[in-house]
Length: 151
Image 1 (cartoon, one colour):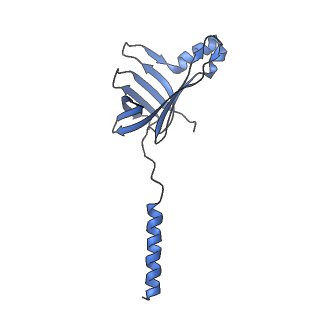
Image 2 (cartoon, one colour; image 1 turned 60 degrees about the horizontal axis):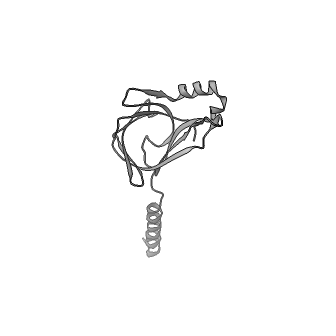
């Protein structure tokens, strides 16, 4: 093998290693990632709010409330919970309220961080990871979410 061939192969190997090491970091493969719609919230006092039922009841009374929403979007860095509540003074909706957290997962234990506020959840998934159940470790409130087709 000539010195020129050996140098060319070494150079190609070096370039290949640089390209490989500079590739984008893989996205985490966590079932939490994606868009979610609220199904229900159950409180420690035994009461449960089923989102679509309460929304349908309110829209039947006041059609302007059709803008109500309760969603969650999770990417590799943040969890964004969006809530649009009815505005009784205008018969439409208030501006959307956003809660944005960074997040860390350790198995089924998730910590959402917003400044100095830490919220710990045990999150489990079912239905081929298309439904999730959050149990707030502070007050045992249970929130159920269904994966949304929205991207």
